[in-house]
Amino acid sequence: MSKQSKKLSPREYVKAISEVAKLSFRTAPGAVSMKLMGAVITAVLPIIVTYFAALTTTALVEAYAGNPDAGRRAIIFVLITAGLGLFSTIWQSIDQYVQQMMRYRVEAKVGDAMYIRFLSLEFWQYDDKDTADLYDRAQRFSQFYAYVFDRLAGVLSQLITLVVALVALLLVLPWIALVVVFAVIPGIYIQFKLSRAQVAHWNKNVDVRRTKSYIEWNLLQPKSIAELRLYGVVRHLLDLRQRLRDKDEKERLVQERSYIGKRLLGDALETGAEVTALIWIVQQIIVHAQPVGQFIYVQQIVSRALGGANGFVSQLSTIDEDLANLFDYQQFMDMPVQKKSELVLPAVPEEISIKDVSFHYPVNDKRVLKHINMTITRGQHVAIVGENGAGKSTLIKLITGLYAPTSGNILLDGKDLREYAPETWHQYLSVLQQDFVHYSFTSVKDNIYFGDVSKAMKPALLQEATKKAEAEDFISKLPQKMETYPSNWMEDSKGNKGMDLSGGQWQRLALARNFYRDAPIIILDEPTSAIDALAEARIFNRLFAKSNAKTVITISHRLTTVEKADVIYVLKDGEIVQHGSHAELAEQQNGEYVRMFAAQLKRPKPKR
Image (cartoon, rainbow, N blue to C red; front, side, top):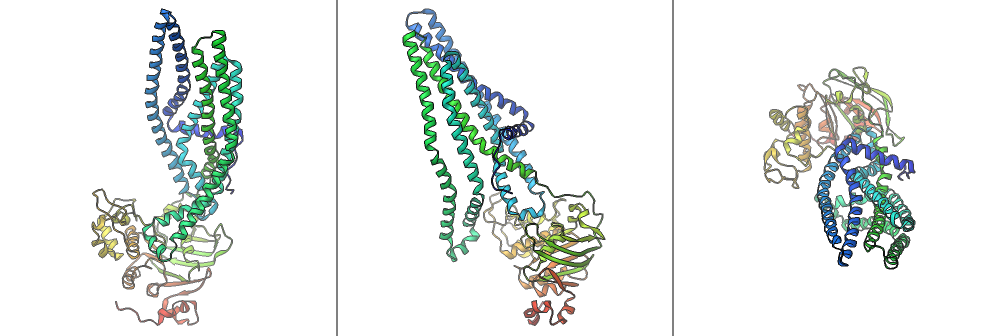
């Protein structure tokens, strides 16, 4: 997938414009119709005003020369001009409202569609750099989609202004109209060349801007400041940010500078055309006694024609960049989404079977898991252990259906997991991963409730979940208890400021969310790494208690956690090298399990 946006052929250009127009019209047909009407009015009205201004000037000169009828005509022309001005003012106010309404509707529709597409992609694409690059470019276009139609209307208005002005010139000075046409062509060509170069530059520097954004984000995070200062990297990151900014912005400015001479030449041609027209009409007034108002007429019409041409170029060059990026947006929106089955999983499976499963990520051919075989029965308490990189978290992603095996099958009561609609499997799962979500924008209570938003909030279940997660104590000490925002950057509607939580407190909150879900299958990936050993022991005593009928699958590096499991699977380099109970594995002195937990096996157990 190339970083470079596709250059548009004339046919593709027209197609891109029509796509924007069609979406805008489907979203707000009335507003679009008014916008198009406004484009015509905006273009034609100044020409009409100019015509009456010229008539007024001629009438005033005639009145000064003693023509009594000319004075009355001048007053009528002034009233007409004032009426047109009033109409223009009223229309601008209406047009501004219509423009804002249309932007809102189009932004809402396009933004929603892009969120839905992004959240429906195949899971592996979130780890794919090409997808991320395409998304960045598509997002850039989507953010300005609502403005593109405004610019299209502007392009149309400027084009109408140019055409009407040239027609008006043709009626008076045909050869001047031709001079103006030839004078604006170089400027249009130069601006198009520059805009294409700027699009290419933008796409070439996607990674540069992304890196700069990451640096800026970290520099402004209060939680990052301590490490940045202690390690003395603040100045280093500021310098790196500056180099990246210069690489992006200075290259763009160099491009701009390289076109200055060409643009000046274009401007000189336009100025020459205007001066030629004015000198010609002055001679016509002096030598051939043409009406004085023709000077105003020609001066204004030539100015309108050149202004329309420049406006047309300016608007079209801006839209040229956006339309070139439209293909990135369309390519992103055409990306295949996750295929979903309609088959409903009828009940909690009695058995989860992993049959000869191997897996490698789509962006890498190296196998992360190799020939995994495992059976988990309903109500069984299972632990998965292994060193970092052994494939534990990847195995969880396969069991939850986020990824599909490269080979082999994951079966639910004998039927392949892929045959079921994912949401009907997920409804039976409570999953807590290492990189769980911190919902800093809402209250502690909502952080727990987000475990199951399919039903109305249940206060009793909230209390039970916080108790199971050992979160009651710290929540009771928060300023607003359950209503506290877990971030000191937030405050509630009453002005109560939030409070930052420690890593262990956040983990307890995530555990409470997991328990609030109250699903029959609990999957925990290093769920208590930031929680003290005694609290962890109490949590897992409840989880692995014989009275707990839920299926529990956990990943942990703590012996006090895994030793309570019914069965322990030991992974090494993507393969299961041992499995059995803690007692059985501890007896195998030369096994991987004993090697991993040697220090903890010798350590006296904490008093409970």
